[in-house]
Each structure stands twice: as structure tokens, then as C-alpha cells.
Image (cartoon, rainbow over all chains, first blue to last red; front, side):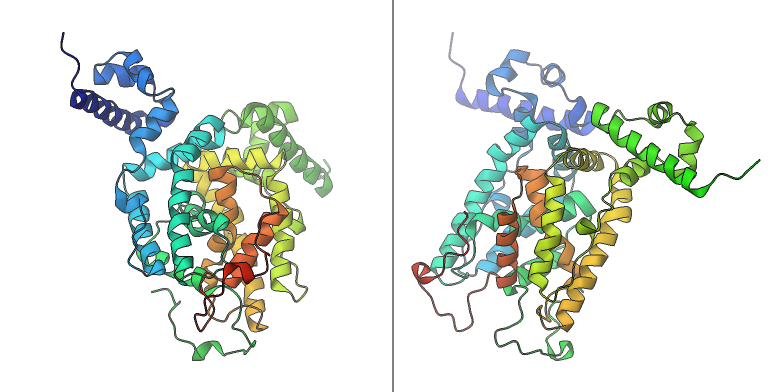
Length: 210
Length: 210
């Protein structure tokens, strides 16, 4: 008997992942079961368990973005522009089905089930924080980022405002909102050195929401 | 027949709220029911529905902090210190039962049920954002905060890093972490004017985690 061709295994992996997302959209993450995925994909339950240890791991693998525009930070030499570019792609993905509602459901589940939270952090949040950190470290070396900026806080500070909108106020995040957040984070909250109290009217209106 | 004394009605309101939190800790927010609260509190279901239109509204009313140290921003004339003081109280509350796990469960439910999210925003997030905005506006007038700081973003930026830790990485937030976040937000990410590239080694180690 011939060995399975690698692309056949890949096809099967893709089929299982796609079936998982389809079913999750229909019944929600909570009611999703590996049995139902196996049945619809026409594979044995053990075929799934050989690849993924749990429903959470399978769902995350199926859901998490593989699009480099979402996960990777470009390097054009302008750190603020590069952060904006990656974040536009991320908030666009969050703002539309199927990813947005499914990722929201996953985060809802992570509040009840610590193993879902752990898998999410291990599989996505920590690697993403590492990519962000590496891009910021480069910017720091190039003098584009304050040498005092605390890289350990980067993920919480730079993505916190967007997760807050996504999970708490549940408002859509526009590109304009992304621009305003980064503009504010780069400028900082402290008045300029010397403490001159410039009247608000004299300042350029670059932060006014449009 | 004598009218009910107002303090009696207040006692009953408090009893219903306390019973709600007790039951929520036992069975979780999802399985909490107004019927069960009514039975344990020894009141009629309609007594509860007269005060609260839904389970979500009752639970929020029972749960949300009334402690002014958590909701109010002091005004000592030092905006960074005042933000730290309020945030210490808020993260302390988040870090311990019963509030922490119940608020987390509520936010989990808000990802599945838009009416829970709407009630949370209307009853707690929006008023809290208003209090924060008022305190920051005063600081701006006193020259303690950059006149360019975008007050519309204040709640998302100032609380986003903490909600990110609470909901996504699910790590406890220490007072030291609070200090580092505010220190970073006040300083901003941009290098100092003039673009001098100070070697990292020459800087005071004030951002190093302890």
C-alpha cells in the first residue's frame, strides 16, 4: 500500500479546520464538538485527536490568522506607520465575519475556561507579543522609539485600547481610531518640557475626531 | 395599612443584591436565575422584576463597585499620582474574589449576549469614562496634561492595558505594573525632541520590572 501523500494529509487538515469554522458559525463555540466536526468532515474522531489534543486547540488552529498582513509588522523605517499598517489589517479582520464573532466567542469562553485562555496565549498572544517586541526593539535601535519605552508593556499598551473597544464597549474600530490611538501613544500624556501652557486653540487640530 | 418604611425597602433591595452575588458565586452567571434569587431571598419574583428589568441588570447592580476609591479619581494636584491611586483600588478589586471572578464571568457573558454588554456599558463603563474625562480635563487646564491629549480616547487607552491583562493574558496586575503603565503612557513612545540617541545604559533604570 502506498504511503499517504503529504499534500493529501494537508488537504485533510485543511478540511477539518474549515469544517470546524463552519460548524462553529452554526452552533457557536460552546456547543461545538469534535464528534460533530468528525462526522461532517467524514473522518474518524481519532484522526482529529491525533492532530489536536482538544476542541480549544482545534478551534484556535482553525481560527487564528495566518495572513501575514495581520501577524507581521512591516519595516519601512517608519515605526508609527508600520504599526498602523499591521493594526489596520488586524482591526479589519476583527470587524468582519466569520473571524470577528468567532474570536469574540473564543474570548468569551476564555473567561469561563482557563484552558482556552492558556491555549490562546500560548498559540497566539505570546508569539504576537514577541513579533511586536522585535519590531519595536529595532525601532529603538534606529532612534525611532524612546530608549526609555518599556518593551515588556508593548503588547498590553499597544493592543489594549483595541481589545477594550472589541470586548468592552464592543464598538467597531475604524482606521481613523487606530491613527488617533497611535498618535496619542507616541506623543505621550505629559505636557512638553518647560511646562509652557499653550492654549488649546493655538495647536494644530490633528487629534480632533473626524 | 401602614406604608412600607423606606429603610425596609432599602434592606430588601440589599438582601436581593447580596443573594444574587451569593448564588452567582455558587452556580455562575449563566445558570443564575431570578426565580432562584427570589426563592432564596424569600421574596416574590415580581418584587425583583419591579426593581430590575432583567437578570443582567440585577447582577450588574449587585456587582458593580460602589466604593468611591474604585470609581472616583482623587484630586491632589498630581494627575499621575491620582490616576495611580484610583487604579490601585480598581486592580485590587479585580484581583480578588468575589468581584474578580464574577466580573470576569460577566465580561465573558457580554461576548455572547449583546444586552449584557449594553447594560454594562450604560451602567458602568460610560459613567466611569465620564469621571475619568472630567479629572483629565481639569489636569489639562492646570497644565498637568498635554493640551493635545485626546480625551475621547482616555478610557480605552488608560484602562485598555489593564483590561488586556485581565481578559486576555489573565495575569494579576500589581501596583508596580500600574506604575510602569502610567509612567510609559505619560512619557510617550517618541524619542525626545532633537533625536539625540542616548545609549540605553546611561538611562536611569526606572522601567525595569522589580
